[in-house]
Image (cartoon, rainbow, N blue to C red):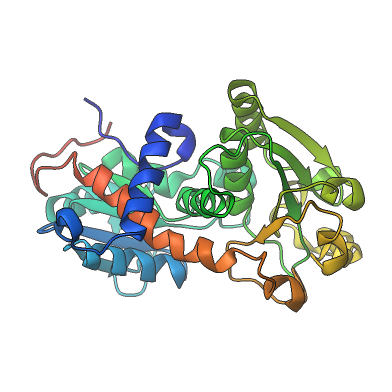
Length: 353
């Protein structure tokens, strides 16, 4: 049987995702050692490979592994680990010291799981959309690989889904209006969280409105395609809007994120003049008043009074902290589910595949 990784939620069935969320909820609402859950990863370890900075992701994975009796090793290639080469056929006479073909297979001899965080380079979207770093680890690793955020952020998806289920008191979110709104930021950011929010909201059968300033900010066709596929299967809907009032009106959920316009990917100067005109996309009290007493959330970190006002962030309708907490619980669920495939590190070298 092929090794199962956690690279995108789209790779997992709805029943598998529901099982992960159920396990995460169980972890959240019982003592860590109840029914032996505090030893679910006893004797197991995970390598957390960070090519980019992290606060919530690193902390929640390290603490989660510890709470389950496991051990996490943090590696930062180019800082406390050797720089890694990803091109096949490359003549390695530059800055990189070792190839991913060796890195992933060696780590797989030491650990039971590998987590990878690697943001786009913001040079060429046609290259970045290949998600080469993550998929190279999955190609060569003999143990399961977890996406800790690359061009998607599936762990954030699950944390958000769990927070919504908790707030609404039901696992059935079908038919609720979900607004995924672009917000201003002084820099063009990764589209990962937006891609993932669109994916999970449509997967759960919600009526999704993607609100962005202009057609240039619509997400990559891959994720728009996933959303259309999910809508066809779940019975939800998908609308792209550039009108703030109609998008917010009647919403049950408002999810905010800033992201860069893909036509200007790697060329920020011409985009800056466009995005600077849309600072008014900030989530504020007036916009939230148009909703059906909607909850608000964001993946964090969030620049207050740039993306959302203090009043929105400090409102009892804001569930961003709940979502952030849920990163711990869903990641524990993911680690346990994937580790169940592994008898122990060094049990075999799959090689490329």
